[in-house]
Amino acid sequence: MTSPRTWQSVQDEVLRRIHDREWKPGEFIPNEADLAREFGCARTTVNRALRSLAENGLLDRRRKAGTRVAPRPVAKATLDIVVIRHEVERLGKAYAYGLIDRAHAPPSIAVSSSMSVDQGKKMLRLRALHKADNAPYALEDRWINLAVVPGALNQNFDTVSANEWLLENVPYTRGDIDFSAVSSTDWTSQHLACAKDTALLAMTRVTWDQDRSVTMVQVLFAPGHRLRTSL
Amino acid sequence: MTSPRTWQSVQDEVLRRIHDREWKPGEFIPNEADLAREFGCARTTVNRALRSLAENGLLDRRRKAGTRVAPRPVAKATLDIVVIRHEVERLGKAYAYGLIDRAHAPPSIAVSSSMSVDQGKKMLRLRALHKADNAPYALEDRWINLAVVPGALNQNFDTVSANEWLLENVPYTRGDIDFSAVSSTDWTSQHLACAKDTALLAMTRVTWDQDRSVTMVQVLFAPGHRLRTSL
DNA sequence: CAGTGGTCTAGACCACAGG
DNA sequence: CTGTGGTCTAGACCACTGG
Image 1 (cartoon, rainbow over the protein chains, first blue to last red):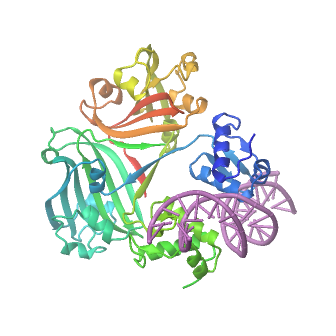
Image 2 (spheres, helix red, strand yellow; image 1 turned 135 degrees about the horizontal axis):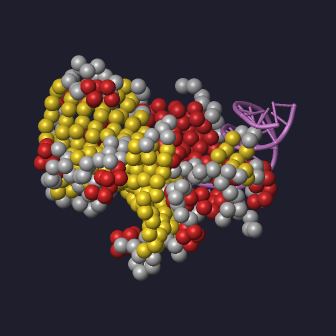
């Protein structure tokens, strides 16, 4: 075979061998030093190629044991979670935002427990609609932890969505997300302009800064919305 | 400040500066050589730390221009797409699989166009139910491209799901996935043991080997299913 | 053109874990 | 104890791209 010299060409060759079943799932492959000799490059270069593949779940690497092809290739799909306005604009549509209501109230049990906050403490709740080309795009129902983000009380969120304001002004270290399907209620149907009981894609996210919850938001997308990604 | 010596400690320090707004979104940070001097380590070490952060979307790096904190931190959520049996077993539940029907027939227009195959060509269609602790877990509706996987005709898929058989036997290079919410039909309600029009989370995937489609599958999860991930 | 990140090298030492 | 991957170094050259 030819002698790859860059880490990408090494990676390509390794991928080819996996794809062509020269190295089968679960099998060990030669160690880095041997591969470096075979490919005529430095071990560092081989390491870079293999480490990258391991991060993508195609290889299992363990000290002393060695490197093997992942027995069950774990497919990792990456979703980019972006500000809704940017998502709409990327689609070439006109974005509009409207605040529906705003309240300073204690959260429900579900919200307070998801956010690990005292149920008695008042939080800021915002509901808003995002539109694309004047059609409903997504409905946002958000709770903000005022103990962590006191400044939110001074914002009216009339023109800038909490979505964007928080991202630009409040740091976070971690987020937990889940996706599910829910039926449209009377209230959501009205705002998303769809029939009651329509199936809607829902994204719920709790954002944390260290161990303190910053905000929890449920986004309901308009009927037919698809979340795309690839492997 | 202290002098980090490993790439992870360099990364931690960079993360801290971003988090504490010492380096603000959109701002340029010192170049690799300067940081290496400041931290008392090799430039390679700084490079490793910054490259990793850039891959995670926290930094924007461009030759000559330099490195800056990403103006809009793009949150990347990674979903692990695994074999359904393993997912169920990981939950500590008993897995069961049942083939519902199997047909050798031409695909619908929707399927043939998604898979870029000639609509006249017969394909293998399998519908099956995955159960967890004897309750419906997910309903699978799959089309297999026999031009790419002729061997599938010799499998009856009575006991091994196409899901697993394909993963273990047929290589692929790419997959396109989308998630959406759909309403349950009479047929799906019957198999998932739910009311008609219940909102269901649907995952549709088309798998490719180079530029030839291998299989297309729609998985409908039982009501209430949540797809979890974190940032 | 020149400054920046991107990569390769050869060698070294270390951390971990299998035997 | 020993083989493996994990990492660091110092230096070098390259590729891209902004000015």
